[in-house]
Amino acid sequence: AQSVTQLDSQVPVFEEAPVELRCNYSSSVSVYLFWYVQYPNQGLQLLLKYLSGSTLVKGINGFEAEFNKSQTSFHLRKPSVHISDTAEYFCAVRSSGSARQLTFGSGTQLTVLP
Amino acid sequence: DAGVIQSPRHEVTEMGQEVTLRCKPISGHDYLFWYRQTMMRGLELLIYFNNNVPIDDSGMPEDRFSAKMPNASFSTLKIQPSEPRDSAVYFCASSTGPGNTIYFGEGSWLTVV
Image (cartoon, rainbow over all chains, first blue to last red; front, side, top):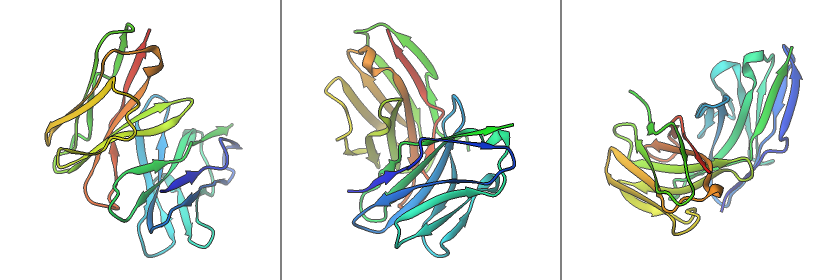
């Protein structure tokens, strides 16, 4: 079985400040890791994903995430946030084995303050 | 590509009525997923299909829920009879092989009164 824990349910941050959204996972097999963003009243959009190779993954809108196998973490970062980054962010894990489903964390609401 | 298309976008119905949500996956995708999102439970996988065959329906809450995929370009999620606790956003998503991105539709916002 696989699971995802997002440690912070809400993260307020001022505009142009850096931000880190934390994600830890557990799985008995190798996994693929994803971050999705959900803007108000919209569906989920992929920000970035880790499949293999370099542990630092760059995504859209200036976001990046680092896969840390020893700490089973996949934290999302952005060096300088904008008001438009206000949204809910979901970390997700998908087994690289036979299972195909995506397991989501509970989400982190990022609110960027002026 | 038009992306995953869901209908209706919004539905308000009375308790006891039948609700049918529809989904057209991205052409060429052989996996289709139905998720439900609520404030209390977050995003939950209800069921997923591979090549039109249901693979795992363990997330379907109860017998009132059923899902079908009669062909590669269409799936339905049906609730009969609907109850107020079914009020949620229902997302359909599709993908190809393992590790590939799962693409989500815009969601169907269901309110049962």
